[in-house]
Image (cartoon, rainbow, N blue to C red):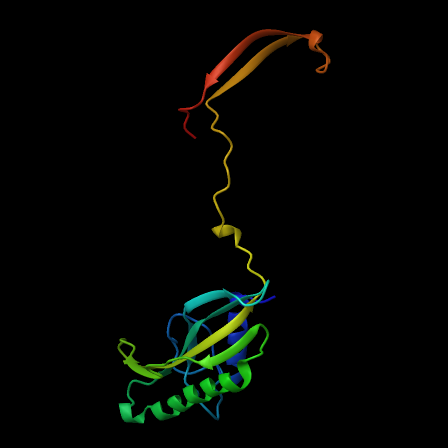
Length: 209
């Protein structure tokens, strides 16, 4: 099975095999140090952000084949103490981190499951720096990654939550009720054992729940 969902899963598994990722989260890390830290080494906390795919295209590749391609972007966000100066931040090392991951995409990502081809995408800002805006003023450094991925599409079912609205039964405007008279122990399958005494028609079109 191969589709955009499995491609994302394979990308995340591959990325986590290359570098430490504490968690995937849309918010920057709240902690200063990683849960992977030890008494011998303190590591900056990080999280990975997975962005929506850009420039997504699907094409017929063979008689019955479909190929998808798009730009998949991620940021690994590291948190550093606010009392560090800009010159003390490991910006060069983080540029090297981006370089390492993007080069590995060329060497090892193609042929991974349904991924046919992989190459680094245009990355205007490989590393970005900002303050987190709290009282501590910690630094947040974004290591940005872009992958241009071509993948095969062999499964493209639709989640029922996004399907068309199911047909509803016709609106019930009125209800007719028959009142029958019969002896005790009558047979419901024998019409002659009961007598229709009255018919009641109830208008329910304006009834509220």
